[in-house]
Image 1 (cartoon, rainbow, N blue to C red):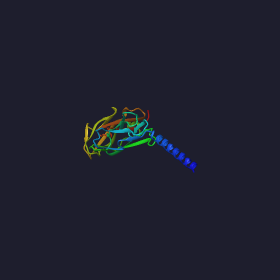
Image 2: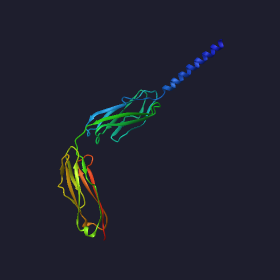
Image 3: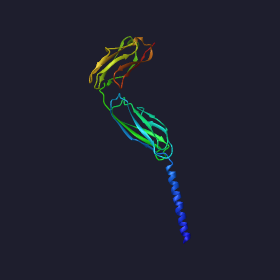
Image 4: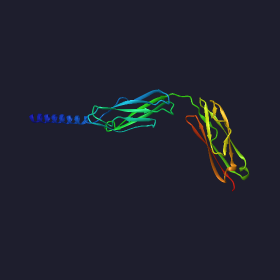
Length: 243
C-alpha cells in the first residue's frame, strides 16, 4: 500500500513538474497585439492625404520581430518606427492614404508578418469614403483612322478626317491643345470649352503630298482637363502607293 502511495506521489510530482515546464515554455514567445484591426478614415476630399497611427504592442515574453509590413495598394504608404519590440513594449505604424483618383467607398489591406507563432500574419482593414468632385469626362467617337492605300492621284489632295468630342461629365471640358506634325491641322479654336452633355464636331486635315511612298503612321495628342484622360492620342495610318 505504501508502495502504491509512493508511486502516486511520484506521478503527481512529475505531472506538476511537466505542467510547470509546459507553462513556462508556452509563455516564452512573442505576441503581436494591434490597437485596431480596422480603421475608417471617414469622408475625405480626393486631394487630401490622410494618415493614422496604429500601436503595435508585444504582449509576449520574447522579443517581437516585425519581418515585413506591406499594403495591397500603392495608394498606401507605411512607416514603422521599430521592427524589434521587446516584451511589454510597443511601437507605432503610420498608414498614409492618398485617395487621389478614387471615388466612393474604398477598402484596402495592410499585412504585418512577424515571428509571433500564433499569428505570423496580421491584417488591418483600411476603408475611406472619397467624396465625389464634379469633373469633365471626354469621349471621342474615333481614335484610330486607317486610310488604307492612297493612290498617286489622291496623294495630291488633302485628306479630311472627321470625329466628335463629347463631354459626358458634370463640369466644363477644356481642350487645351492638339499637338501634331506640320502636315496635320484641325478645325478647332483652342482652348475650346465643351459644357456637360454637349458634343463638338472636329475635322483633321492631313496633307498627304508631303508623305513619301510606303506605310506611314501619324499621331495627334489631345490635351484636356479631364483628370482621368489628360492626354489622349489619335492614330492615323495608311500606305502611299508608288514611288
